[in-house]
Image 1: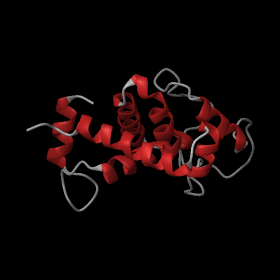
Image 2: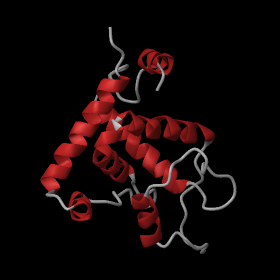
Image 3: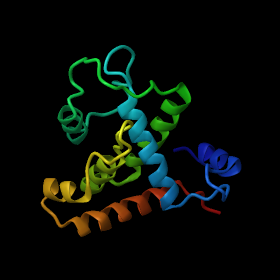
Image 4: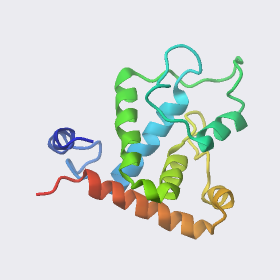
Length: 158
């Protein structure tokens, strides 16, 4: 996120009552909104294939929900261009976590995936713990650390 876009966000205010506050709650909200938007994108037609990197965790979640074939299933509405822009911005925040802390990136990316139909996390804390071979409380702590890294990176320094 560029300093200009951070400044625009701070000046415009957030979607919550306290305008201009960038904190962990806001970052989590935006990441979950981005995850919902990502999972709402149609599986055919125009895509963000060039923009979004492929996560094995995301692919396994999509396949486990049976979204690989085209059925007459309940589908969320196609997101607007503004929602896709916000998604791109929020998903870029994951890259602010240092590359050597790739486990934190995986945790944040997986927890951002919210089903647009059921509004539930695709990966619970315990499921992530089983995938990564760690305790679910450790996964929660690591998620908080990762969000704190993102908050520190996008908060404008005065």
